[in-house]
Length: 278
Image (cartoon, rainbow, N blue to C red; front, top):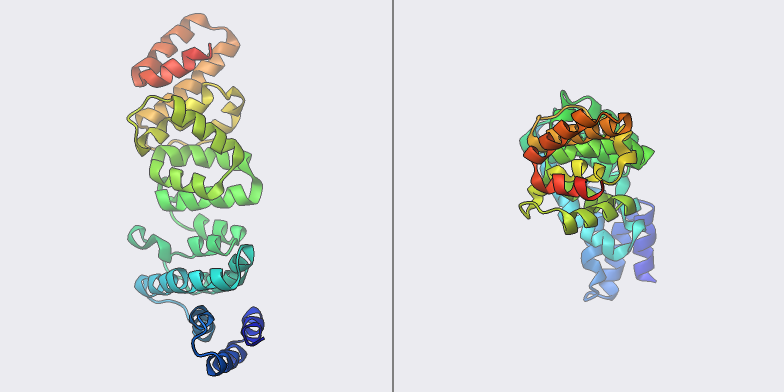
């Protein structure tokens, strides 16, 4: 019953009542392990603020405290999705306090956008990202926007951004796929990992968009919406694949042979995957 009193106050975000209930629990059961994680949550409520952050370091420190100290405690008190729901207002508060901080690549996690994502506030995250200059050419905000568009509008809307992210930052692309856990993309990723003969590291994922087009030709219209990135070999290969699909539809055999040779020169493994389906 005493534990339930603490939980009830925590669910209401009532710091004063939660502290009183926690003291009552400690007085009756001083060795109760629940005091540890309840205490972290009560401290978090007592420390709530709307004062804007003036420095990136202060925002990072607050984010790390919520992530490393409070979040594990919340997982003990409110298992499953209810824990994320309880934390959401606290992430939103941090996002509001960080709203005036400009994006800095070395302090990316201090920006408001990833904090809005942690609170599942997808539209607010998208708005915050759109105010970052050249966000589509920077790995962190491009990754954030990709997730925001996926959560808001689904996979079709996110595909162009996923393609650009694979070209720009294979490591962030890999991390994002784990977070999204999309069944369709997961199947493609497993097939890619099993069949693509690359270097055997995360850098191979830059070739993923071009590889997908060797089999899933219906995705070509979505992939065409991807904007130019670094013009690296994987990006050029994807553009060549789009060209090949167009030439195939038009029956332009001479140009098709020349373009196939271009693809082979860019990546032999990709060319082999393409020819296997022809």
